[in-house]
Structures are given as C-alpha cells and as structure tokens.
Image 1 (cartoon, protein in one colour):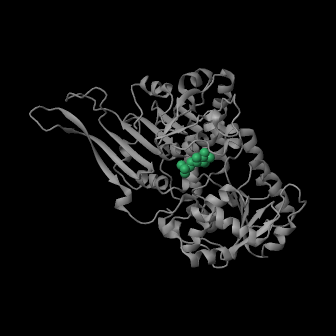
Image 2 (image 1 turned 180 degrees about the vertical axis):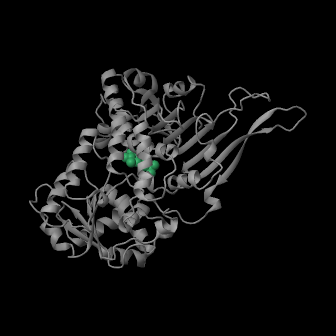
Image 3 (image 1 turned 120 degrees about the vertical axis):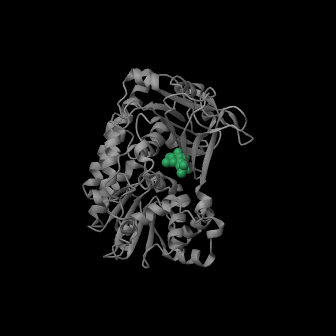
Length: 492
Ligand code: BG6
C-alpha cells in the first residue's frame, strides 16, 4: 500500500519549472492562482528555479503587468501571510507574455520566453472553448514534451459530448498522466479529511452502509449571488456549475469503497464505480426528485440584495437555476435504497457546506422519543466551520426516562490550529509534484456528465420555470417538501 509518507514526498521532476498561465490577466489568476503561487513560494514549495509566465492578449509590458498584479491580486493574500520582501521576490518570478491565442498562428512569444529543458505546466484558465486551439498551437510550436503537464480549469464542457470533445482534443497531445482536471473542492482540507475520517477510523466502517445509514445529505450553500459572472453562469446554472462536479465529488468520497492505496488510479477507480452506479433519472424521476430554484430580491446579511433577474447581464427571461435540490440513489449493495439528498444554491441564508449522515433509529423504541427526533447523526461541517459532530441520544436529567439529542463536537480548527493552505495552493503543489490523486480522471468526468445530462435535458423537456426563493433563505419550499415526503428534513 502506498503510505502517506510516500504520498507526501516530493515527486518533483528536478527540472526548472515554467508555470505558464493562459488567462494570466483574468479573474481566477488574480484572485486564486497568483495568491496560491505566492503562498507556495513563501513556504518553499516551488522549485528554486521557478518562473511564472502569464499570458494575455493585452498589449502591455512586464511593468504594467506587475502593476496590475499589485492592484488586483495582492489583496487576496491574507494579511498575516503578507511579507514585502517575499512579495518582491515572488514578483521577480513573474513575466508577461503577450499572446493572442486565437489570432497567433504559433506561440512564438511563448516559445521565446520558456526555457529549453524546463518542466512546463500549462494552466488553462480560459474559456473551455479555447482549450483545443491552445493545445493545438502549443504542440505546433513544439512546447509539449513528455515532462509537460496541463491543468484544465472547470467547466470541462457543458455536456457529455462537449466534454468528450475537449478530452479527445487535449488527449491528442497530452497523456492522461499529464492532465490535471481541477475540481478545487478536492483541494480543500476538510474534503481531504473526509477520506481520513472514513478510511483512517475502523469504527465507522461497519456502520457505513444500508440499512444502518438511512439517508445522506450533502449541502453546499453560498451566501453570495452570481456577482459579475452572469455571462458564464446564465448559460450554466447550478447543475453544471456545482452539482456535476463539486457535489458529485463529495458524494463519491462519502459513498466509495475503500481504495487499495492512495495511488491516484486506485482512488479514482473507486470514485468511478460510484458515478457509474448512480441511478439514471427518467422524466418522472426528474419531475418528482429534483427541484430547481432561482433567487428573487431578499435580505442577505441585513442588506437588501437584488434578485437574479436584476443582476448585471442576466437576461430578463432567464430560467437558469441558481438552486438545485435532488434525491439520488446509488445502486450498489452498500447503498441500496439509501436516499442521497444533494442541495446547492446561491444567495442562501449563510455560507455552509456540510454532509449529514443520518443513522437508522433503534429497531425497538424503548424510550419515548420526541416527534421528529433523530437518534444519531454524523454531521461533517466542511466550511466555513471545520467540525465533526456526532449527535446522540441522552437521558434528560429528572425522574423520568425522557431522551434528548446531545452532540459530541470536534472542532478541527481548535484541535489542529495549524495553517490551512487554500485549495488552489495545495492543488498547484500537487501538480508541480506530479500527484494526480486529487484531480479528476477522464472517465470520472464523463461518467458525471452521463448522469447529469439526462437531468438537464429533462428540465428542458418539462419546461418548468425554476421556483423562486427569497435571497437570504434556505431555498424554495419544494426543497423542504422533497425531504419531508420521505420523513426527513434538511439539517441547517
Ligand atoms: C466554483 C463555482 O467552482 O465554486 C462558483 O464556479 C462557486 O460559482 C465556487 O461560487 C464555490 O467555491 P467555494 O470554494 O467558495 O465553496
């Protein structure tokens, strides 16, 4: 078995690193990638000879680029991690390469900037419609060799067909072992800890199955609205933006069988089995087991906020969902008949991502149980709290034998106060070191689309508008009804 020490050892190539960011002026580069690279640099996790080549269409020089970075990226580094000297050192690594991906027949400017013999990591932080052109031209310019790696930012396609196309195109030049499909949820500390919770503790495993577990809830709630991203978001919706990737990845970790090692393929094989066992939904299932919502004006954090239709660049007639709740089943021996309730939405009451494992009630009701009381739940808080709570029944003090729910709370932040690296920082270090475990393999991505596509198509066929919900609420009433029908309720 691959031990954790083996996992964490540096599998870097020993070559100088050229980190090449396509979309180097973009929002993701400014908000996430450069701050993550700064943090990796601060902690000595980048090879000594690293260079970061940011490409962009804008006709600016290096000084102007650095100024842009100062103005748009620096503020995304937490104050206590900021250090002028390190920042200056970090800026030394940065170069700007002017490159119009569509217009340039070859990437000569990039070729001139990138070092011979360097390990090239291409980070494609652009619209996926540019992935093919970028890869074609990288190859035509002779920049792809066996040491090169390519990082693909989501969304990877809008459906199965487009995902296959991207995979085929990228796969013409890069072997699967050179392709890093990012799902930043897999880089989150708490999500990685989920694997340890399940497979590093033997007490859970015998219980981790039907009929001991009666249901599973996975919620990823966001307080923010669509912000300035309507141009992208309105064509995607919550299903493509969140469920098809982040929520399904969480579901995989909850539901997978123990892998035989932490080796990338061993882990991804098990996740793939879960995705392939997800029950496909027909129209009747979609109508019954899924809920789409769209936020309307409401109050969030004591402030009145606009509805989705009032956001910039949202077409007035848009039926795009900003909320999804659904009931899914995994047709395996372990999970037979256990409903998995998934829920995600923008402009919800608060930012809260959690997994709730609800255990079966005792087979014989010895004690009087208050209506609606659930004997045991394991609540795994992923963000912003990092906690594991085990809900148990206890006797209420007094002469009777009344029971009451109590909770064993493990606050992971107090138990382990060490710094948490941001997801992008951890994943970028993984790319540099050649660790693929926390990235999606091609077949995983395609299996996820295979399940999601019929649902999205079904919604089109049913042609129902999404249910309105007030910004600052927990979503439309229909989402509560979905669980109530089975005798459950969302754990807020
Ligand atoms: C991204 C989605 O993948 O994840 C965004 O495109 C969403 O719409 C974001 O806001 C949520 O990530 P996090 O890390 O803030 O939970």
